[in-house]
Length: 245
Image (cartoon, rainbow, N blue to C red; front, top):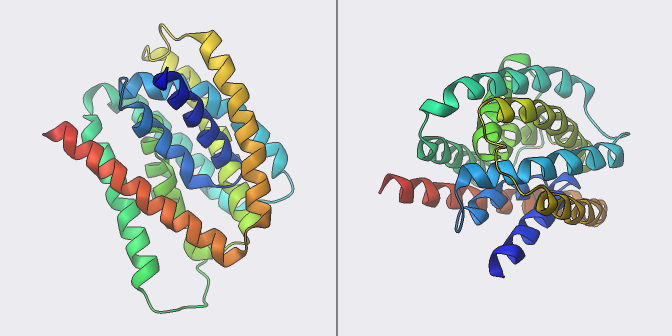
C-alpha cells in the first residue's frame, strides 16, 4: 500500500515541478528508489514527465527565454545522445554523486557570496556545458535540475520566465528520451495502467505547481528553489554514497 502512495506522491511532485517548482521533480526517483530499482523508477516516471511536460508548456507558453532555449535545447539533446551510449557502462552512483555535488556547489555559491544585483548573460559556451550535463543527468536519474539551474539562476530571470524556460527545455528533452529508453530496454515490463493513473496525478500536480509559482514573491520563489535544490543534492549524495558502500 505504501508503495502505491509513494508512487502517487512522486507523480504529484513531478507535476508540481512542471508547474514551476522545477527542482522538485528530481526528488521523485530517489524516493522511489527506496523500494524499487532506480532504473525501473526512472522508466516508470518517464511517461508522467512527458505528459506533465506538455501541460507545463501550455501553462507557460507566453513566458520563456528564447535565447536560453536556443542554447540549452541542442545541448540537452546532445547530453541525451551521450547518455544513451554510456548508460550501460556508467555506474549510477557516479552520476548521483556528481549531480549532487553540482547542486551543493551552486547553493553554497548563492548563499555565501556577497549581495550582487548584477545579472549574468545567457552565454553560449556555459549554456552548452551545463545543458549537456543536464541531458546526461536527466536521462539516467531524472536529476537534470541542478546543472540547468546552475546556468539559469545567475541570470535572475523573472520567475515565470525562469519556470517556462525550464518547462519547455525539459519537455523537448524528455520526449526524445522515450525512444532512447525503448532502444536500451528500459520500458520493458512497465505496468501501463499504473502509469496512466500516475499521469493523471501528475497533471493535477502541474496545475497546483503553477498556482503556487504565480503567488510566491520573486525572492521567496528563488529561496524555495534553492532550498529544494539543497535537499535534493543531499539526497543524491546519500543515495550515491550508499551505492558505493
